[in-house]
Image 1: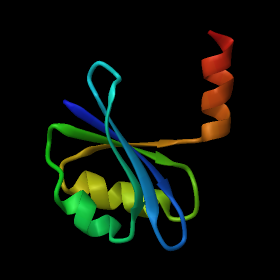
Image 2: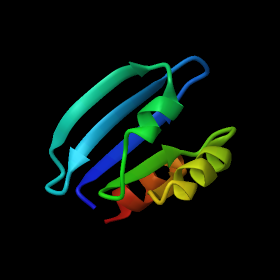
Image 3: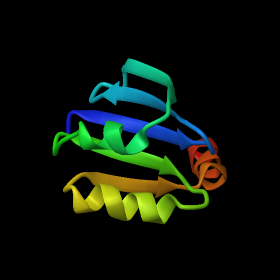
Image 4: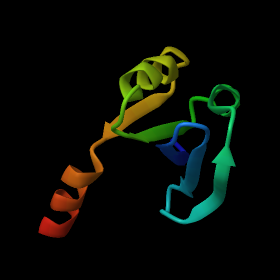
Amino acid sequence: MERFHGIDRHKAYSTISVLNRAGVETAFHPCIKELKAYLDSLGHEDAIVLEASTGSFWWADYIEAKGITCFVLNPYRFKIIKDSA
């Protein structure tokens, strides 16, 4: 995996931050309205992290069917893990 796409889904659009392996943000997309088109442009060198919300597991299934690694993350639980280190 070379790129990590953090996706925050909203009703009408998604906000996406892309990090490289060093954790440096290489791209920021504040308003992606066609999430399927964005996901269809990705490949096996990409990994997706979705914020847990309504429809997240449907999207995770869609992403994984394309052969892309996908994680669904509860941001509240992640904060607990992050702050406990």
